[in-house]
Length: 154
Image (cartoon, rainbow, N blue to C red; front, side, top):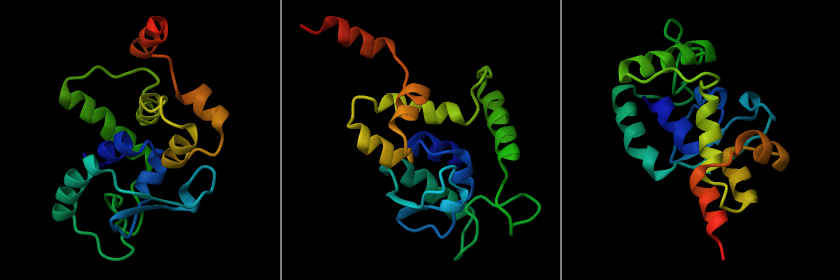
């Protein structure tokens, strides 16, 4: 599921992922589909390249076509509601319990938390945040491994 791969590897909002077009080697995150109306470019994470190239071989995209078109109307992007349905369906197929308050934003929170030891300016740029307070209070969480490292510091 390439939407899952992009959510996990880029930390971007599902709406931004669903509205990707014109697939080059870099990702153009479009301002009109960004919560903060921010146009940005980022390289494609290497771990996402192989699954996305396989998806594109099965679902070729030409020019300004949506990478993830709506099921019944390819002139429109897949909407968030349908993407949420597919995520719940993927959980069931994988035999995973549904996480309360999970959804697509759980990938964004996990992405930010995994990168909290990196420079905040770089995490903000890569994940599309404009506000450091939002990143650090709403997205990055304490985790047992980091708490243990804090406690074990000399």
